[in-house]
Image 1 (cartoon, helix red, strand yellow):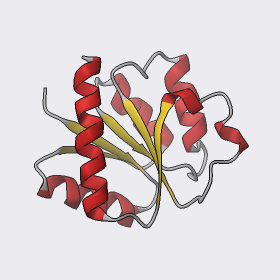
Image 2: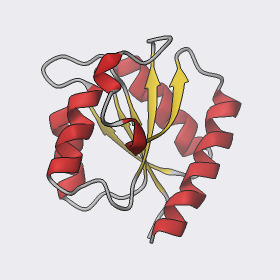
Image 3: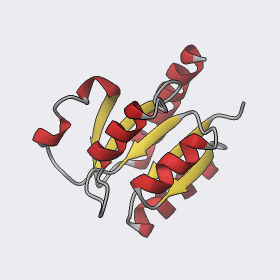
Length: 127
């Protein structure tokens, strides 16, 4: 299976930036504009690293993670929060054990790639 990254963010520029970075590193990338789209991709079989924004309309990142857990879509994935929030808020309570890392925007592309390679190796261990 190809190494995959899913960027879940309502901001087109963030999705485009991550997609360009991933493609430059020969990493498969899937984009989702919302929590609902993320869940659809997971139901379709996506497994890999999920870069999840916190602040999204309708279903924020924390609610998306809760839905993943409830629908049993978490196994085989590594979740990394990629957000403009400097610190997690109280909505993280109860799902922190499902979040592997918390990265803030703006991000350094080289550091993002290094992190993605590390987390993709973790995904391999989950298989």
